[in-house]
Image (cartoon, rainbow, N blue to C red):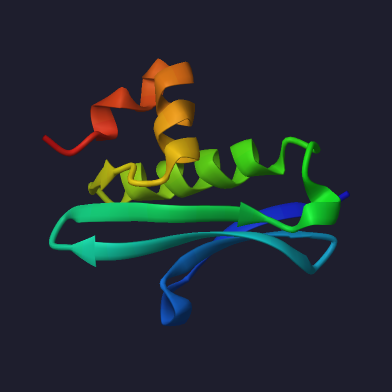
Length: 93
């Protein structure tokens, strides 16, 4: 199973694909160096496979790589950061 997380800047969202099938998205909007993440979604038939965590981790890793911070407006992203303290430094103040 080939899983890939990538930024679709045209649609302002990170996408996760499994074997070239789009299975989830993390919408965003950028305000300067701050990325607001208001919504994440995984296709119903792929829920429970851990793909939301893979999507959010990939999204946060890319935000870190770009030197940006994040506002986790989506409850899942906020919970993921709480559960994975290595990402707390990304929180916008």
